Amino acid sequence: MIITATNISKSYAHLAVLNQISLSVTSGEFVSIVGASGCGKSTLLNILFGLDTPDGGSVEIATASRIGYMMQDSLLLPWRTLEANASLGAEVRNGRTEENGLLVEKYFKAFDLVGAMASYPNISSGGMKRRVALIRTLITKPKVLLLDEPFASLDFDVKLKIQRHLIDYHEKEEATTLIVTHDIDDAIALSEKVIVLSGRPSSVKSVISIDLGTRSRDPIAARKSPRFSEYFSRIWDEIKYLEEEDEASAIH
Amino acid sequence: MRFINLYRALPVITLLLFWEFTTRNNPSAAFFFGAPTKIGAYLFTKTLDGSLPRDVGVTFVEAAAGFILGNVVGTSLGLALWYSKLALAIAKPYIIALGAIPIFAFAPLLIIWFGTGMFSKIMIAGLSTVFVALTQSYTGASEVSKDYLRLMQTFGATQGQKFRKIVAPSSIVWVISAFKMNVGFAILGAFIGEFVSSNAGLGHLILVASGLFDISLVLSGVILLSGLAFLLYFFVGLVEPRLKRFVVSYL
Image (cartoon, rainbow over all chains, first blue to last red; front, side, top):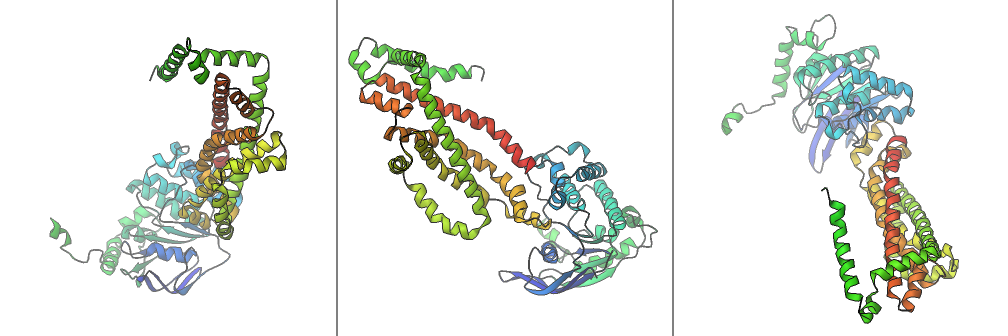
């Protein structure tokens, strides 16, 4: 086991956010956590990484592994260019090296950001910032990836491209990957295992293993797979994002 | 704004013409208010005999050295307080108390301790700038976004790295604004020191001239003091982009 969490609970000022959550991720696994918005997914990830402490329960992450954590906010520093922002993490770990610079450049090319290397965050779109934040995380070559909504505000075509790169990284570096997302499609297309959280206070509702029967892992092939919609309905029925079916018609 | 410099000069030109016109054939008005032509004559002749350049030079060196001393010490202390909540809690009432004392009250003391030469004026100018620099830089450092510090934590950054990569760049704006405010305070400090006791400098010039009721000479000194402020401001303007670039790209 690379990540083991046991009976994690957390509340903020009497508002219970997490209730007795247990989960485990084995080495080299790709796992997604899905749940309705505001159900405490980010809090859970903060606790797993160790930024926040749980009120109860415990977290263990294999100590030898270097962890890359991409937070929910891109948090680019406004006084740094996108390029300098992307290399921040590596700079902290190994100083300013030429190798880092080359790697950043490679990623910017791969993520369609070449023209934006010298731009500043205030004139960049949310999707660009998201990609830079992902590069910033990957560039430190982590063996464990914790990604909080890594595809937020990405256009569909860009998103698929980024997902291909992420799978590629996951396989080549034999990284253990845990992502948090609200998007059921992304979770199914990428993961071997999907953990479904209930609404607040959230607990683990079910853990679903995904086997789409595709020969190689690919976000597009996965979406084309006949089993894809089966998984979608299963997860959908677990989450039930829209509790009241006629909520929309009540307004219009 | 094509003729902005012309427009800027208009109020001064109008004032000078009015001033000269009213004092020209009126000796008592000229006695109380001086005259632009007389000021011009002083600035010219006293530059030629070398006494003005010496006074300006002395005050400039005192103000500039005090400015550098006060800002370096104040900024370093203010930023250093970011490292320790305890040190800040202890230091805060002292900073407020010491910062509130008018520099005029300290000036005689400093002159007793450091003599009547330039060094005591440098210390007075330094003291009158140090609290502004300290308060500004500390405020800048304490207003750093907590989220950025958490981000640094995800990379396993040390306190020193957090300081260099986040705290320093985000408080540089505050530090620079302290520099700008301190231009005036440094000159004020040097001037007060000279006013209390000195044998050279613009403060000395003004003190002597006002004792002689030579209003034109007093005003010549005042004009040169504001010229000094412009000069210091100009140097701050030169330093600003370089310092910003250094902090953002090399720390």
